[in-house]
Image (cartoon, rainbow, N blue to C red; front, side, top):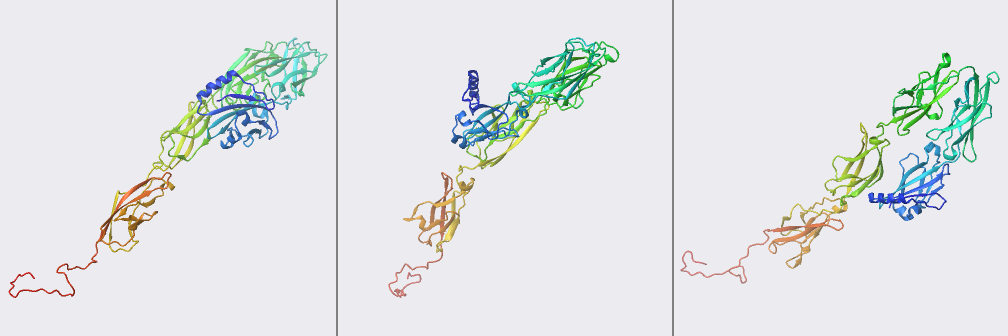
Length: 595
């Protein structure tokens, strides 16, 4: 079953959400090929190396033997491994210093996710570690001081935007509020933009009198909400001017524009415009950005005279999808107006899919059934929409295919029965391709070797061998060489030759011939006599070294050839003793008489 669990170290409490459990139960039915779990831990930033994050073995219900037998390991795909799995103890500990501000910046909540993989059987457990903030950063201003030139005719209620403080911490530890040093002329009003960032304005509550006070020195203090509280300060210098009683006014309260990511430097974005009812120098307007976010100054610039906004840096959709700029128009008398510019970033297909190998097995046995998993890969594309939609396939024709089981995860499996004797090795190219225009792709080559099983018996080229041997031969002389072939390899192809038992003329065949078990050489076991035996027929078995062994038989016919080793014998008349034979012939015998 796949379900999400959040555990906070030391609390001993396990909050569950019934709705989430139901959703994960449904999800389990979809990915039943894998056993998955999702753990979530929460730790503060800046913990010492080796600090305990959580007992994953206990929390996932796994014993330590399972972690070892499954070769439990962490796969994150990140360049920095912040955590380490102690498989012998089943715990997750801090491996590298974790700075929440460096890891996530302003993003909250801050977390990183990785997978713990076990094998035999395959299990995939997703682990999310949330990094909570500590108050280790003070609010800071981009500048040391601010200078205002304000006419003494400025109306009560006139607003003057102040420098914005940035605090790298978030939540309660982040920027909380501003304070303005005590004075008779100005009060402080605080606001929050759509992203929740706080900024402040000075509001004139009592008219200025240049003759009484030609300048004012104030301090703006920014404090955060941490304990202990941290603060930052900027000096405000106000020079009081005469006679500018009209502030600039933007012709729009909100400007909207779009820009394509990776746009070239100095690409046009939009133009803002403000008008001033005054005449002469007091009607000349200059434009500038609020320093609400110092990072935006590296991406955009504005022509202070024309109000044209251009790009100055590389814009990355995968990092920022929208920008909100606070724009100010100021006349020579120091009066200002404010507007907002929202810039939408348009994604382009500038990221190719990335292929990561989670596991891979080679060699694979030739008797593996179709559907056997060879490897698991993870494919990710940082783009969005169609640009981030990835398809995965195998290039060319091979008895393998790609199957997807989880989002971004693919299995490389066998698609048909393998035969090592036909093809013993494959180079499989897996191609991941996105749906952008034009599409981008990546590929990974897998070398898969096929291991042998004993599926072929030895085979003789002939079913019957015939050979001749002259009688009166010497015992042990070579008669014939038998050779069988086995397409298997190694021990499965190691052939032994065995003489099958059979009696010949009442005696064992082994008394007449023998076979060398390794070479297949047939040897005469005795001297043969043609006058006694003219032909031997016996069977030899070729057997391989597989388990179980396979074999085949061949019939051997050994024909004895005659030699002139016997003189003629006179059978009649029968000689009785001497070498001479006496026979009586009548004197009157005619020619042709039978003697």
